[in-house]
Image (tube, rainbow, N blue to C red; front, side):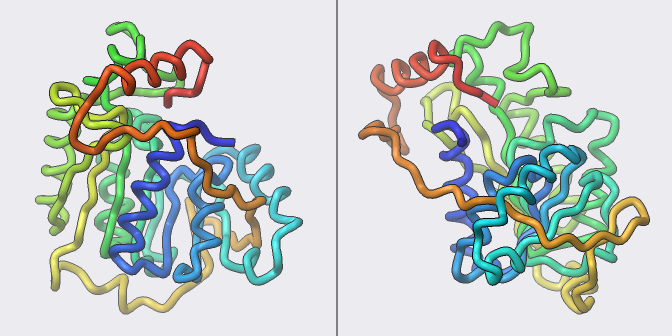
Amino acid sequence: MTTWLHDQRIEAVLAVLRARGATTVLDLGCGAGALALRLIHERRIGRVVGVDLSADALHDLRAGLRDEPSEIRRKLDLVHGSMTELDGAFGSFDAAVSVESIEHVAPDRLSRFERSVFANLSPATVIVTTPNRDFNGLLGVPPHRFRHPDHRFEWGRAKFRSWAAGTAGRSGYDVAFHDVAGAHPVFGGATQMAVFRRRVGTSDRQAARPGRPARANGCRVRLAVGSRACRRTTVAGRVIPDRRWSQSALGFFGALLTAGSDLR
């Protein structure tokens, strides 16, 4: 089960992937499969590869796939490995997505993430979402704390945009930014999203590479894996307006915090 906030992130990512016409997707830091499980039920998408360091999460994801039809199971492969250590042997993907995962990477390893994804794989589209630290006060998170103890950092919008713009410039991409889960006039959304689009002619070497079994840290892995589909859910009539903020929206986030929801 995912929280309302995480559902908003997934819906935002899916909207971009649909608009971009992606048919092959790399899910970076897939965890228990909140995104991957949605992707394999997208008619247009034919191949999904999930990468995660947690063997337990991947095991749970595989176990849940037992009830899925074989044509759905075949869409999904999982790799136990690091998203900072990928190479061209993964083959080509239309899109790579990191949903609330980059903040789990140590800051001194972010250059490895950049090289792994943007240089080694070079997909046409890269989507990165991460918590917006500017918004934390509205969620009741004290200034000296992160939303989750496993986070290695949390960025405000200025820092995130600076990192994303630098990465895009060095890698031959254009980047656009979006608020997710609200749009406070001062603090933005609870989550921030960067959508990178590879410039035409920057690098087509990966697009020309035939698909191969996935490889991470020198170990070839190809596992037919997956999990029970997560159906779309709605939160009883509570919709956050795209371009305005209201007391009801703030109250709703407060209710999530009071109920102990996962704010990652």
